Length: 295
Image 1 (cartoon, rainbow, N blue to C red):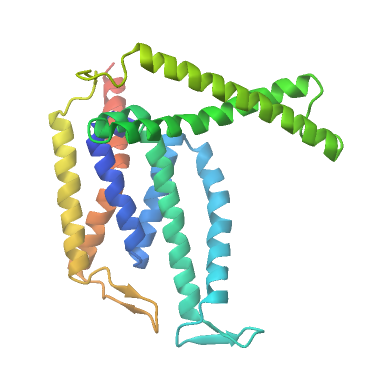
Image 2: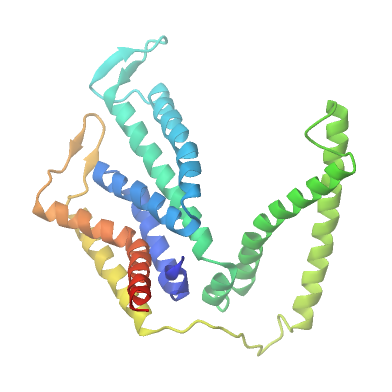
């Protein structure tokens, strides 16, 4: 289930650029909660429920560790809880800022994981191919190379294990020799693949002047509506930011804007903007259930 992925690449890219930037600059607790919740929700929609538990298992320790590390180095704040063994104060503001920064980083990481699922290499080539063709090609090849390399190394490791070269058992020297054997195979295979890719690109006329490119992407009314919605909601949230609705400062003391009707409307707009792909998926599910019920 990934209906938002079927939208035009410009719509996909615009959405992720905006939500990732917003997730980086908005440290208000409500905005952080929205970005964290939506990033996990969208990741679950894209990758399935089984990834939710795994994401939480990785995210919670990261949140705790980062929240604990920050007070060890940051001693600003007026609310002193106690003093560390070195004599530096432990402040409530530094702990709160640590949690805020950790939540922001986890949200950005989750959004980038969704970004990797939606923005495929062909979309990058379509968007940036005519502007920066070489860079877009290299970037798309890198995005393809990393998951392919991981899958290939698993296959090679399993094959080497079958002939007695297990990298996870035996003495340290034996495991090192087995690991070098796997690495040698992977380097050789990567070099061969690069030669094959070069020959294939050359045979297809890559780099020749006047060469055209085929694209399956067409900007439809659905894409226009989605893009306009993203831009309007983004403009409303930015206006709220300029009006001080998203103000949140930890040092030297906690200072945040008061919640009112206008502030709630800005947070609602931010939530709708961030969760737009999730709403699109839910709409498609409801539409499909309605069709099934009529059969």
